[in-house]
Image (cartoon, rainbow, N blue to C red; front, side, top):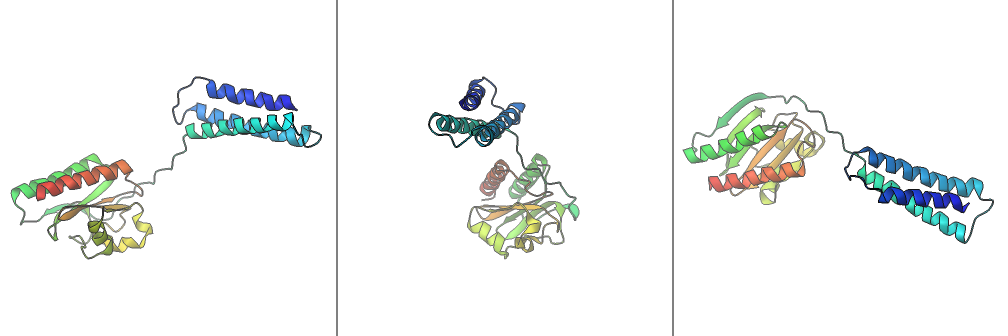
Length: 231
């Protein structure tokens, strides 16, 4: 029956042209998604139960148009619906809270390293550990510390990070690379190595996937600035 297909097309077109704020997560997205799926179901039911035989000509063209309109409405609703990955739960990192700075640092280098560490810990609620590696040695550690006091600069993950743009491990406990971060708390959930000229910044987080792309970009910017101050 062409009237059912026509009704689906008209309803979908009205939903598209109706003025409404395009805000993800609003009821608008769910309503359009439900409306599109319902329209597709109605067209399918029309073809299976109401049409006495496979329709040709005008009926087929109307059904195709209705399917396209309802599918578009459903996809539009899906783009507006809030479908977000659930954040992992934070854990209490196993270690001792503390700090250490290399005695050999001059006052300017010490101030720069302490600035970077304190800024990172203050700006992020998920970063719990900071190491600064420069000139072939660990010059600062702060936060929740593990059993070892120095970055393992022979670990493959670390050397690869220094040679490239850095390394972000969003789920540290689930990958073999965990063995390369024994200096971090043993239950650290995520880790980032951000290289700079002559060294690297290493941070550990208390939950998986803790760092969004903007967080990674910010940490890399801090590392580059630290490298400028230490050079």
